[in-house]
Length: 369
Image (tube, rainbow, N blue to C red; front, side, top):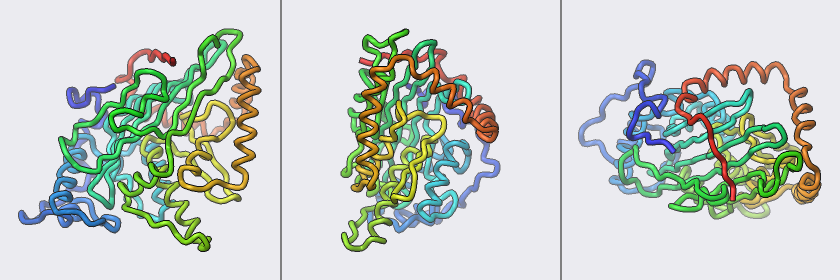
């Protein structure tokens, strides 16, 4: 993990000048509470009721974080700003409404050609509607060896319902033990995790044995929405349009957690829509899009095809566990499908990550128990 409060070099944006960054004039000395928050960060989105002290603490904390780390709007990280911008469109918000709420506390990325090999990213999302914030973290490793693939990751979040401490304070998620344990201690909550089982599974005998699960549940989604956008009311069961809008808001809320890390996973909310994998990060070890299905379940609904997709996914896991060394042929097919536009985008992403790769350890040792 990083020691960001000890060394500026671990924050790739620490030396960013204030050029082209909007500087707010100081408000009157008597300005406090919600008025102070609106002055620096407004317009807020239907701000919820809170005490003046809570809004003042929020404003000071967020200003301190912006001064130290900058936000995505001030210093774009293309993969993150683009992903968050897509959520703004989904929610019908003005450009940068959410981007300026995201601070990158630490981002260590090592690429392997077109994909991420190692990533350790911690971001903070300040609510645009409440005096709260959420930290989101991913630890990720994916590397193809001669006869096998190393793959493991865990995604998690931590809600801060009360502002306290310095803006540079953060809680390290523990990455000891298996990925299933990385975001379940110290107030951290799991979104999802996965890895290829390596127990007696290596060399010519290697198989894609996916061990993975969703940690997100409906109560957690509502907690996240309440922290970021305020409470949400469940619509009447006979109001179809309101139900669809409700689903989309909850799904967009979960997608924002991923987008703040640069993960743009498009999740269908209607039967005629499709789930679209994110680029760069592999969140599922096989072709089954169980993360998208799990997000829908955590948002309180499933689509008509989800049960059959789950059945096919179970069958795929059974078949892959019994079929060694299938990944080489699959990967060759994937390479043939890559188009020139994606190659251009990946080249730009490589340039984007150059500033970070010097801060990453030369090798990440993955041990799954």
